[in-house]
Amino acid sequence: MLIIIPSVLDHQVALQLGREIAAADWVDGNVTSGTVAALAKRNRQLPEEGQVAARARRVVQEGLARSQLFLSAALPKRIYPPLFNRYGVGEGFGDHIDNAIRVLPDGDQMRTDLSATLFLNDPEEYDDGELAIDSDFGRVAYKLRAGDMLLYPSTSLHHVTEVTRGERIASFFWIESLVQDGAAREALFDLDQSVQALCVERGGTDAQVLRLTKTYHNLIRRWAK
Ligand code: NI
Image 1: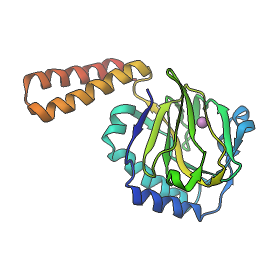
Image 2 (image 1 turned 30 degrees about the vertical axis):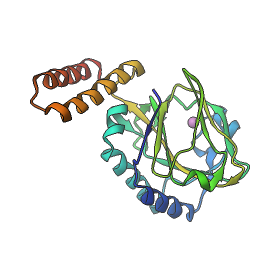
Image 3 (image 1 turned 180 degrees about the horizontal axis):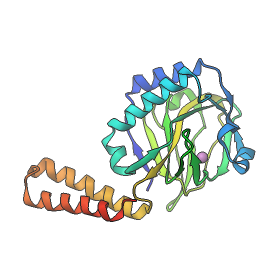
């Protein structure tokens, strides 16, 4: 499932964050790629150590923790500490697949089930620079407003088209989900969204709402790992 999560960050907060990190020192983006991906990657990345990156990570993490839609769609078990990249004119990232396993800063490993890109400037500020993803329905391409995020299966080939004007600034990271199977996760998401809508209509003590809520949590008990 591929889903847009609107307003993970408030629009102005996202733009401000994009401007703040843009003023910091950047390095070649290949510091986080696998060797195959490195061949296709031309961009720059914000070094993970340093106060600017630490503060920026915190802002993104707080936004994620507040986003009910993100939590419902991703059912996160672990979230890789958000990274930041920028693509200037002539920079892009050819077709690649994200590494299946990432080593966390504490040395633990995590499986990447979902990939996320949170946009930190607006589409009007650059030409091209779309995030294009191979999906069940063919190739789809997105450029989102600052503060909005694209969540997509890490199992899909994807690329960022070469920027031809301006600059694209974004945060990117991976999620290990409590529910590895994408179809099961999507079913839980649909169920949760419908239960929440019914809860508003009928109230949380309605017998049908209660039974569906029970079903949702019991399915998570069966499937969460
Ligand atoms: Ni990627």
